[in-house]
Image 1 (spheres, rainbow, N blue to C red):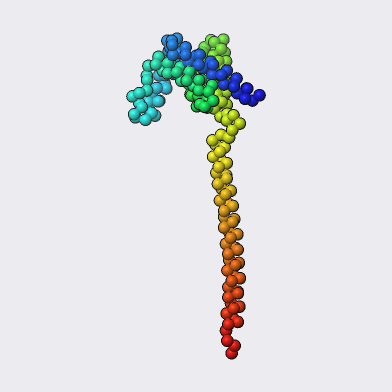
Image 2 (image 1 turned 135 degrees about the horizontal axis):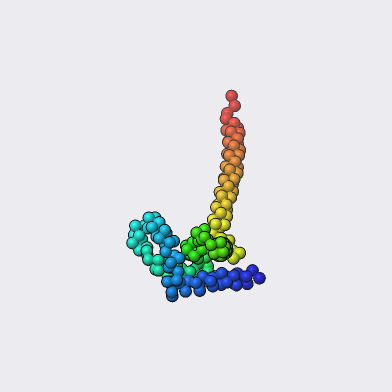
Length: 197
């Protein structure tokens, strides 16, 4: 049952992103007016913190950025559906969802009460999608994740070290005990070999 849910849930979650992304790639113009205020704020920040060799490659044109975001949604959605790259796809979709949500649903800027409610509801819906994507990104399908493996690997190494220290102490005690016995025996033998006065 769990496997069936996973098989159905990932395509259901990815479908909207793939369709919306394909639409943005094919015809980005309807999205450009919404995207421009966000891209005008994000691009300078990206250029400020990007490595020098990438600064010149960051596109500034909102139309290009809308298409790029659409491509990320298509590729991320397809990766989410596959078994091999689903976690990376989920992370890519989260990265894509943030600017999309800020551009399309800035309810805090809306003056009309009804329009504000609609944008707020869509904003919350996208936050919920982000939560679903986070779950998809951390889902290990019943297998131990990397953090669990690292933590348990470190615990096993620590336990092995403690065991080795205990064994070394035990061996050292046995060796010391054996050395004392040998010393007593040698002392007794030396007494027997000494001539009497």
